[in-house]
Length: 387
Image (cartoon, rainbow, N blue to C red; front, side):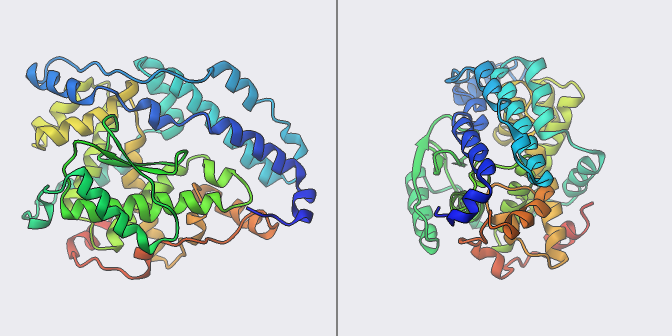
């Protein structure tokens, strides 16, 4: 990204610290480390035990020295940044990534990891749990042909490549056997990963395309086009905003279903079960035994919550959607939130960066946001009544 010399000279300290943090952040990506390496084997063992013996997950080895990385983060001379608001942003960012390092180095240690996860992602609030139970109260809608899983990963790849043609950025697709979701974007690698052995429905392909490409890759590439790397690496607490935008994209393109909303609700309850001290089998029994979700989906939800030792990231999808939908009802533009991996919490600071020439308006927009294609009145009622 070319920046005017007078801007870089005037804000030399910001650019220097930003570049330093970029080199450090590029060495860590929490989701890469926290995704178990043996999901299918652990799943088979858990089912064979009749859901009584908690699975033992294996994780990838660290490729950096946590203490050394901590020291480098906190060696930044933030006092050189004259603007109080921007200095606070970088201070918060350092604390955010420091917490992430602690999370990564404690993966597999249930007590430590769960505590560190809470510092990054928090825990469901009472209103989040109530929202989840409100959604689960609705009667299931009859299945349609669009939800039959008939497409393999290779066919999904072709679908996503065709979908991405409307966006003017490269689409790098890789297959993986060690991701928790059927598809996920790696911001660091600017790639869309697909689970190699997954099957996809037509609705799921539309959902993932608008979620992963329409938001996660849009914000990845918008972030790379910003003068400051902080937009690409991620502002503190960006996950709730990112996932809220992504699920809202599913709604706007007409792909969001009640079944999908219920899935997000189960994730909230699974995250909440961690605070209640549930082990893996307890959480699985809650989702599968009490709420009667099929055992494969119940296992995935439980695994996502218990991976690493207790991971609460999934509770943010529903709360993020509620906040973004509220923004939509009030006719507030989403453009600021698409500038990179940003958070609603820092929108005023983003405006400050615009005014100083340290941020650019978005290059890539989400095409689904242009027109609402949702025709499900139940979904409208639910979203309008989330707290």
